[in-house]
Image 1 (cartoon, rainbow, N blue to C red):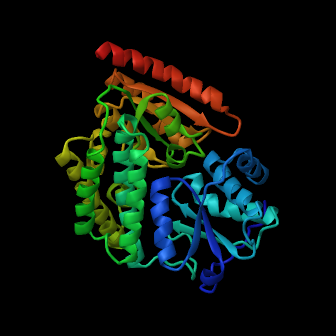
Image 2 (cartoon, rainbow, N blue to C red):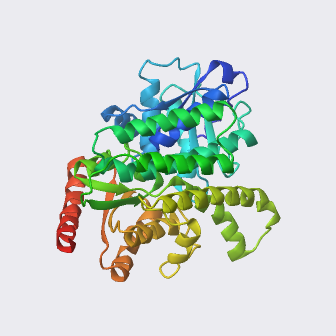
Length: 420
């Protein structure tokens, strides 16, 4: 049995002397989050390094039986530390932890072990988690900071939704991306001025976002509509899924990716679901219940703002997802993305995005059960569903992955032509 690696705390003094690095997953969301943390005095960077060196470092310090997201994120961080860009004695690493029964609960330990083996054991690891897994005196999330971070999810999800439905049709190339960058700057500036994160303010800005994206001139041409689901990191991270969204856009598709707010609502709701299913103290969950209700209000306002405009397809609510999935799988199935992944495939199919790529780390048992394992039942209930499961792994080639997706797209184009 390997010796457990001691955690080095991120102290209050380190906030002044150390640069925090964290791996990219949601590019738009994380740019705003980075700006918020900088406004709180943290020196922080989002890692964007890619290439074979990231995978090589991951394979060197993480066992290849460990899930691909762990291998990639750890490889990306060690690759950055070895690049010479940073003073390794004045840097710390920041990562999220989901908790629960997934291997993701072990990321921090795996990272510390990898740092020790790479001769970088002095680098502190800071985790953001919902399960009280760890704490660091130099990085404490206060209520005002939490409110801003939740608003980041709200704005990021709206920008992702609107840009994905605008970019493929824009008459002036690059106009959508420029508007996204403008909104990232605006939201960050509001947060610096201690505004922009209350429910009333977010609601107003939602309406402004929808109006500005709706005003972008677009071609009225039919396109294949593709939804992306899967393990959270493989679903969102361009590093993990080999730039899946860009590949689909280059293939002439419109892409729909469910928002991260749904996943956070799921992560908060599942401990409460445990209490409903198995018993326990509801009093201990009052704080999470408050956050759940707070996020639900953001979600409601997002959906209403999109529906009022009428130019875009609005997402379904978390409550609706939980309802539509019950004929297929129980809400107690909650390892990894659990029943939520199945629900997202149903939602996308009902919304007209029945051509679905399910991005899964190879060997991720929970996601193979709720993803690939549910596809037969979904195809039976929704004959129009055109779903392909794509495994992402160090040994999987990008060419093979894209060829399998192209096969799915060929069927999608036939159906589009057939249905006019």
